[in-house]
Image (cartoon, rainbow, N blue to C red; front, side, top):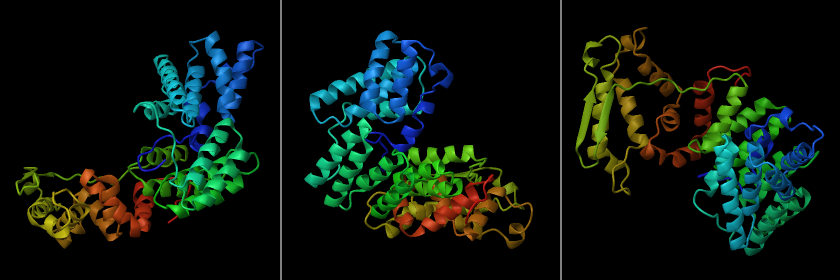
Length: 414
């Protein structure tokens, strides 16, 4: 799962562990009642939880023939088929399995299945039949990865681990190999402690991908280490903040640990419409000039500063870019220009506009850019994130811990 997150070939750790929950299963409903159907149902879901997708799918297929209205069985079968198709190398067979997976998942959806697991699988199938998986330009590494994934889907973790290690030996920069070794140890009885070691190796290969941090956080939660897990969820989020999986995992952790997440409120009563051709329109709240004792007139400066970027400064600061865009430098410079105009007495008074007060606090703390990138990024500003992240991970984390995490049952580390 990288920048544009797709479901892992096989299963992601997070999704495997929570698969039963996300499918909306009622455990009482799948308790063994003595009937053949209920016993098979229990057996199939046990195999599903063990990541034995082929074995589980065979039983789910039997169950669907007996009852094609069991939403949870359909959802689980659809996901099993999706997992199997993703490691199927034969094009015709992969297409056949993928089409059946989509049909089954859509039927489950019609019956009320709204699990995130099914939604992710359907999203993976939305672009048509997935292509044959390719992990590396190194032929030996790629073959070992393909074989490893087949073993992983079968639930044969020992074989999968050996094959992933072969792939990593052939291609030492293969992020997925290290990641999936950790993933496989996570699924192996009694080997959870070894998972973190391999997630750390994946991070060393590429510290700017979110997946290994998130998988590691899941492992730490299973080990009963919520504080350490929280830090890894934060690292995942600041690695790829515009990645839905990274963000939702962090939000999910917060909800389960009495943490309220919210960005500081900054309401800018000035809108700037910049065409990029020198034609800029500034729209001001007409009430600004009447609010002389709270510093609100500073927002006029914000609008003027942004205008200079569209007409002159962008070309100076970004000589290699031919088309104007709203940038991190422009937004930070314009906000700073605004707060610099606030009179000292107003700045220290209790009448200061709350939005301006929040900006001053963040600027004083050195996290104004982090706030802009994580709370106010548009398409233009987002382009500056990778460059900022290179040397400012500490500021991004500081912003999240000190300004976004409002309260917690677990004390926040700094």
